[in-house]
Length: 224
Ligand SMILES: O=C(CO)[C@H](O)[C@H](O)COP(=O)(O)O
Image (cartoon, rainbow, N blue to C red; front, top):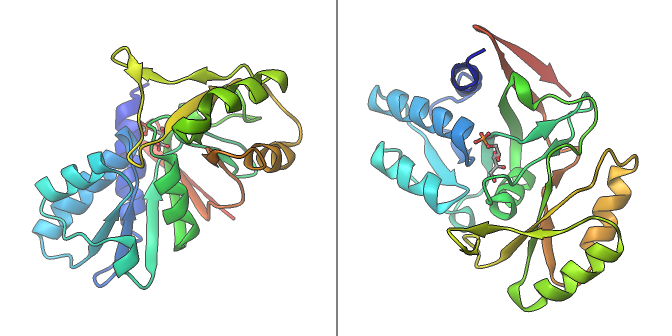
């Protein structure tokens, strides 16, 4: 099974929803990078779009490919947002944030008319929770949040990169939580958001309209 090829096929399929004149939200990660590259190719061939990147990495890639960009504050509406996911379940609920861009990703998702998730076949799970749930936290509060989450049995782990705390594009930290196969995911989201200093979680509940999954040499599409 070639997972990278599956990501690419899902990305190519998703880009078919993009038409000239649209404002397109650009996700982050290796699957989203395939989508940005495909859009770049189409832009070279005359597609007229404006992109809103969800991270500095995606911004850099899109600029290299000649995709015109704007910012969220300057745009009226995002027609379609395309991004990857770390896990999705049969109810189209997601865990995102493995790449650390969950805050901007969730903001773009919330502000988009159509949300398309693209994934390789390994991202599909019966129940969310094998992937460690990323939670973005304000540095000032992170130690205390960590203690609260420890008491909740969620085994928080401060994300580290190159021996330093991982810092998001918004200047925050990330705690990765072991949520297990928790039954009430909505309640967990509510509880996490109630902790002062928690900026956002990687639970994307009821946010995806379409999920396109690469499966071998083909794709499968789930719709809400
Ligand atoms: O949420 C994300 C980044 O914050 C990514 O979409 C998620 O981590 C999937 O990444 P990849 O496509 O590389 O598997």
